[in-house]
Length: 256
Image (cartoon, rainbow, N blue to C red; front, side, top):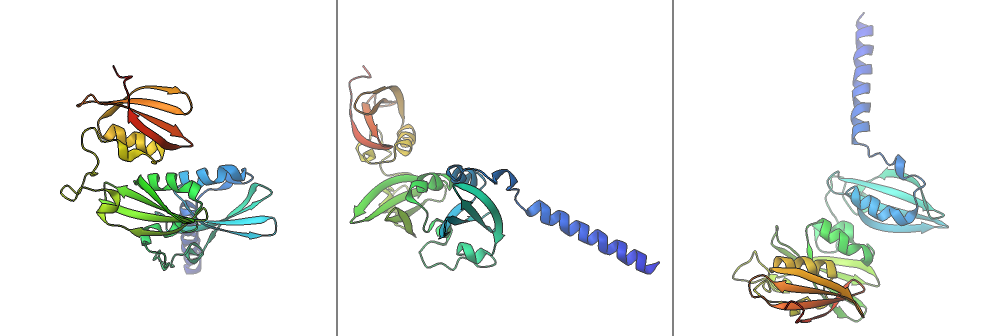
């Protein structure tokens, strides 16, 4: 009788462990045979950040990390399609077994961004609550400044040869923060707009709305032009977008 009870208890424990394991395991079944071109957005939507890619013959092995789940996975892509997705040790995502980051690139918060393609950086930083401020170039390197208002934090991202090389904390001045009012952007005063030239367009539009501008109209000529009017001052400006960046910002008479 005792043996029967022990066996029943053991079966129950094993069943509960299986349930817990299943609940914690991501269901990637729907991604098998997905085109590789859709992979990045799908993983970002699931809360994963790209870490690195390694190639072997015609196969590519991508590592992705989910900070909320403290979980690293490897995705095999062959002939342009996803073939498998498996859990791997956190060390494969430049993380310690307990989620501690042992990388040497600067900011622990952004370890999963190291070696990410620069084309994915904009969306990833927005997902983390940061907004683009400016880019400065030096040789083959580009230094991007991003600001998180909720954390009152400025960081500089260095992109070299199309990939993220480092992410480090920067001073408030690097994100043009008014030292007398740390929670606000220094250029948010009424009517400011000239500093937006060179910004990522979507970030510039969000910033204009934050500064009190309202879109009046848009039209396509040599590039996409959007006319804006400032709510308080009545100042009228227009932005010229080309290639996803603001190429021109100037005053306009179209608001009249």
